[in-house]
Length: 140
Image (cartoon, rainbow, N blue to C red):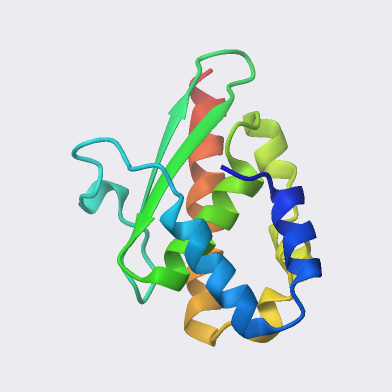
């Protein structure tokens, strides 16, 4: 999986938004599969028009470090899941909570090129990721 910095560099290289959408689709296709049984109601992200599922695993350290997996039934949204996971997965809970996702996604120009529904869905994904980080931190 690519890092957020690599994705940002690739976005800067691609001039045309059609190419960027194709790249998002490629990122989504490269997502590792979610663990068996995690595409259920408990893992479903509310607030997304497309179906989106997220799962997190904490390493149990103090502070906990979380690894995320995700899936969507829509190609571009699956790419957005990949971008969100690149930004958050593998970080400690305090790092996740400190990330300014809106500023990070603005670097990619997503705000100007996503439909309002996809933007809301991306915000819902970030909210779910941060809520998982808060729960892991509280449990540590």
